Length: 120
Image (cartoon, rainbow, N blue to C red; front, top):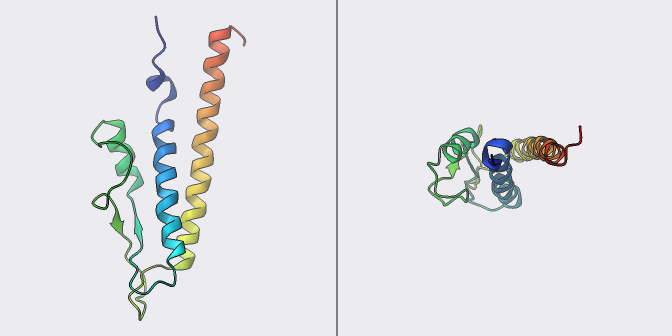
C-alpha cells in the first residue's frame, strides 16, 4: 500500500503555485501604478484552481489569454487602470492566503512524517 502524495496533500500545492503566480501579477500592477495606459491584470483564482485540480489547465503558468483585465471604479486621465489601494489590498490578501496554504501544507507533511515514522 503506497502513499498517494497528490491525494494526501490535497489542494495546497496547486494553491501555492497559483498564489505565487498571482503575486507576480499583482506586483506588476503595483510597479506600473504611474505608467500611462497600463492595464491592471489579475486572474480568477477560484476558476484557475478548479481547472488545475481537474487537470484542465496546461500547467500553472499564466499566458496572456488566462489573465483578465481589472475594471477600475474610476477612470484615470492617462488610461492607467491601476488603483493603488485596491492593488495593495489584493496583494496583502494574497500574501495571507499564501501563508495559510503554506501552513496547511506544512501540517499535512508533518502528519505524513509522523505516520511514516510511527510517532504520534
